[in-house]
Image 1 (cartoon, rainbow, N blue to C red):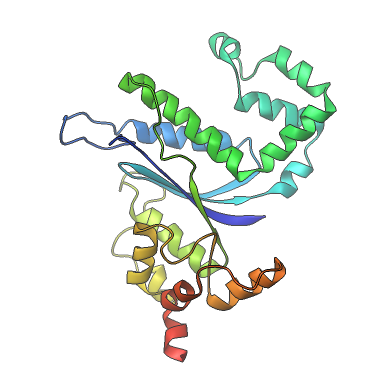
Image 2: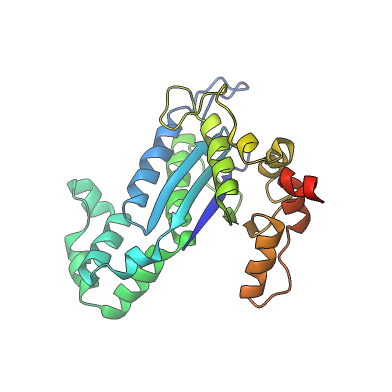
Length: 251
């Protein structure tokens, strides 16, 4: 179980949403694609969605994995959820939530059910199902083939509430004013309340991975986490020290 910040970027000057000033084409409707798919997948996988931000050429998602939920699901529930994730053409054309024949075959195969259970716990599978669906729809609309995303998504684990809250605020301030989750620009900043350096956090988000790598948090938290994993250190010590103003003051 953990809280993660995931980001996916488009390639070939592709638009995820917004107005292409060069061609004059508006892709704003794709924002609804993302919202709909996130809502669907978060109801099927073992994840809790915290926030997201759809930008013109990239997507931010903040979520928590809940393998404990998935472990408590029955074999039939796992099979049904998996069949809902991958509905298949027959079920889609028939307007059914899933392929009943596929479900019956799957529920009778304990090894396959176990594999699906592991995948419903897996953050990589969640992002794969999200990104593949969006890429296929975008390519069909653009009448092209090939990659839509810059390969695999990037991910950081958020180690504390301050880091999590600052990221949620950042995504909220980048949501359209008429959309759920929007945070007014004049609201007191979470960054200030938690004594986080706004410039350093903006740098971390804008140039993703510049301060941290696999996990994000205070320097002492990174050291403690590394120790639990049998490692001497995780990349991000200087990032943790520069991000938290209170630590710099104490130095």
